[in-house]
Image (cartoon, rainbow, N blue to C red; front, side, top):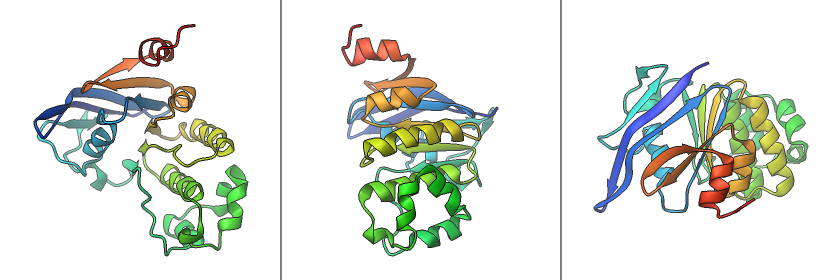
Amino acid sequence: MSILEADSIRYNISGRQLLSDVYLKLETGKVTGLVGRNGEGKSTLFKIMYGVLNTEDRSVRVDGKYMGHKIYKVPNLLGFLPQKNFIPKYLKVSNLFSLYKLSMPDCFAAFPELEKCVNSSFADLSGGETRLFEIYFIIKSPYKFVILDEPFTLISPIFIDRLKAFFAREKKNKGILLSDHMFYEVMDVCDDLYLLSNGVVRKTSMQELKVSYLGISE
């Protein structure tokens, strides 16, 4: 088991303290969820952890070893799925499998409806189809940890169920951190849950989240 810890993260924007001494932990073999309302800073935190957004106050460690400010440059350590599509529209699906050195049959076994797209360019795919391919490429790449920002966005319900099953299988090989506004899907797939509220991250449980955050009493 490997552990990635992000702590002492502070971020100020236009005089507002968006993040205050944030700490969270990822473990290989687990899916970790981060929930919070829009504007709380989830995407900002992910970018700081990945190393593409600078802040003086941050520490990211893997198994106790400090990884520096640009963790994305460490080979096979941390992959990141941003909210916006990252695959160029002009590329063909088959070309991406070659570039990532991944198996098309394995992908289509998990998501058979995508096989019809194999000879298409990404310009011809729906937003949901593109998102599924992007998630597959990030998860199946040899990263020890991955961050997924809004992975369920644009995904139809049938694919959401398959995605959750995919995450459950793939977490055996890596640690997965994800956030999405679809709280119930996040809670359903996660082993550990964190709540970001008023700049502070704290570990929580599904029951506590339902009662204190979503206002659901059982």
